[in-house]
Amino acid sequence: MIHFSVEKEGEGRARTGVLRIRGIEIETPVFMPVGTYAAVKTLSPLELHEVGARIILSNAYHLFLRPGTQLIKKLGGIHRFTGWNGGYLTDSGGFQIFSLSPLRKIERRGVTFQSHLDGSRHFLSPEEVVHIEKDIGADIIMPLDVCSAADASQKETEDAADITCEWAERSKKTWEGSGSRGALFGIVQGGMYRETREWCARKIVEMDFPGYAVGGLSVGEEKETMYDMLEYTSSFLPTDRPRYLMGVGAPDNILEAVVRGVDMFDSVLPTRNARNATVFIPGGKLLLRNAAYREDIMPIQASCECYTCRNFTRAYLRHLFKTREILGYRLATIHNLHYLLHFVSQMGDAIREGRLHHFREDFYRGAV
Image 1 (cartoon, one colour):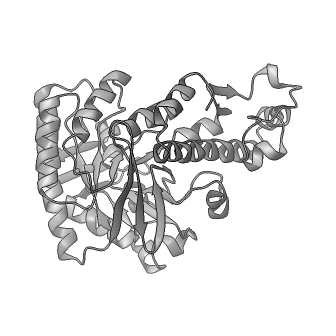
Image 2 (cartoon, one colour):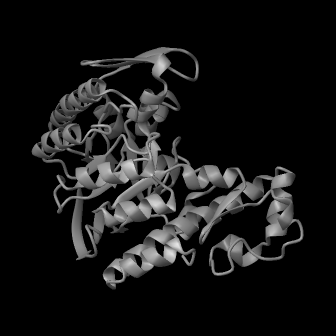
Image 3 (tube, rainbow, N blue to C red):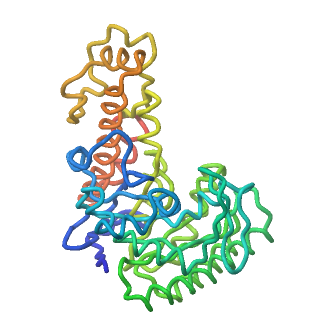
């Protein structure tokens, strides 16, 4: 199980807290790097620790297909299997199944889908997904849910939210009946419809989960719509439980979500951007392949203390990407994760010191 405590409340719904997992203390707000296949691309567990990561996300759908959850269980669980001693959260794969819509069929009893790897067919019920995640050995597990598209009709969205609630209830019964290992969070769906969001949030909160996630946002809607749906949804979530916004990792989105009361985030954005030679800096980002950096002896960011910025120039990084050297992907990933984790840590400091408003202003004028 986990324990969460709110430490300091700030402007709006912003707050800082501490999430305790297996004796590990994780300060919130927190960003979780994504290691879909139980590895954050290009980085070792030691490097993840050095950039400030304390909890990472892996995907039960992908691990179920490869290497297989029974193998992970046999070899001692995901922490021993991977050598990562920090926290682990596993996503059920609901979003991946949603994104593979031509290859799946959703019914009340569960999901039938075709593997994107070899075309083999599989069926997963919400109960089986809980067993899979418990076998993996994650600290926080997410139930199977149904994510609706941003432009889905109200009827489609209501049906998805209804199935999500039914599956949440079935998942919780399975979780409680098998020892409650790993903290099971509830997921609130409801698309872009306020009344559906409220209905789903109230139903999920009634089930009394250790934490709550907001799903189905950042799926193609406008930013202001996302912020509106998030603020409205979070108003129905209990203040004494962690709140997790799934799949969001752009700095501006994280900042606005923290103001609206969110504690936890994950996204492939920083690592994917890094592999495409795009790195975060205050006020935006740099594309390291650009010819402008051919003779640039500056680091990516002069004020950054990450390993990459302390040791390498933009010119060298550009060279690595132009020659497709793996080191370039690694160094850019180190910077992007350090930047984002430090950014979230700075927000926490600003909340504790009562200056989040000034931090927000500094961010939008490119000073953070």
